Length: 310
Length: 284
Ligand SMILES: Nc1ncnc2c1ncn2[C@@H]1O[C@H](COP(=O)(O)OP(=O)(O)OP(=O)(O)O)[C@@H](O)[C@H]1O
Ligand SMILES: [Mg+2]
Image (cartoon, rainbow over all chains, first blue to last red; front, top):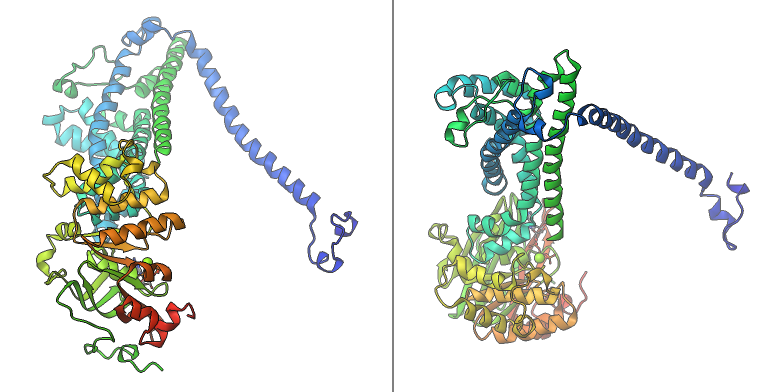
């Protein structure tokens, strides 16, 4: 093949030339094939996603108006709304964040900055990595026994607090791992410089390490919370209801009230026979997706801010 | 050729001091039989070295001979390295830094023995905060604005940054960043400043500025500087310590102090052949 290619350079010595077989046309073709294969892979994912979105938008758009957002669920599909599940989701989200953020970030800081490398920390590390992979329904079962039953006097059983505690446990490993990764991106020369000035470990972390790692930590936390907000299985296990026609009071007592969340309401509507309820479900999905979109946009915003400040 | 005792294999007893060893009364830091291990790896062996007050001491030697390692012993920064262990004693103003009683006073030791690193490491805070940080954490009671200005003036940086103290320290040029780090080290009013190749990332002009600076700083501080630049060592330092590295029977490489003397002696009439070869650039 090479012998047929025209000479590219006048002084090509035929001796070293015979050692290299360029076969450029073949390599270019192979390149093209792989470009097409990867493009097709991307496209098929996008098509499925697109069909899904369009289908939901068609079904759900008709029902999506302000009254859908401000009405309680109802037996009549036309007047049923999403208010209590939406508020429930936001409650769960906030309480979960309040529990999981300090615990996860604290544990991450301890493991990354304070702990020595001994058998205990290695054991903890392995466990955290494994916990991140445990199916969410297992967390639901744990939450049912521990938070709903044992902690009944505090949580009042099947309440927002039980749900939030369960979801906090679920995303704790993700936050810990995310925190550690964010801390690891802070160069150790900065820590050394701090110590060399006579700073204690906590002063170095608070003043230099944590501020630099914070956007990364927040990004990880928000992505973990996005996972929590879409979780259905563990909340079904701990007994979230599907028909709630009141809002929890904004007070510590609110924590103890029964609740429902968007994915559970959607699941409930989908499983009914009437088509009208299916359309309600589609509208609910749109609301849930908008909520997720806002959260992910926040995460991207924080990450960009982070990269700029470096 | 190599008849000096320090080049013989380790025999376990305390070595007689190397040539040029002085046990001066004015020594602010005294290393006595210091060996440093990383795990089981012996990086530096049996160093005896007196750092004299208000002098500039240069550490020179081939890569890997343990200059940085020894330097980090003087402010116990090796404590942060997992598995690092220091044997022997380092006396600071007569007191052994590796004594148990310093374990919970190490921050105070590090305030009094400052350090400047090879790569400029400004904190991602404002120029002002970069200087004020050390003073704040060490409980400085005086006027902060005045301290910041004085430190920046001493580091010959004030005129360049006085109008932009609020800007990030990272916005400065490499040479300016390094002077910021020196200013930061000065701000906590140390007795000693350790510098690990402070000019190796800088252009010749910034380097000369820092060398001039060192001459001024030596009035107030004791300076130990690691450098690979022979001209720099001969230009700035009063004393020079030459380290070398030799293979061990276990296949590792071990650093040791070959010769320590006044800089003129090291560069013009060293007692050891290997020193002569190294400072004249004929070193294998
Ligand atoms: N953190 C560490 N962990 C393990 N070994 C180390 C560590 N730091 C240094 N060493 C080893 O100790 C020896 C001395 O290293 P050191 O950095 O002190 O040399 P140096 O004289 O400063 O070299 P250079 O001139 O290249 O900076 C080397 O063999 C190195 O591999
Ligand atoms: Mg070094």
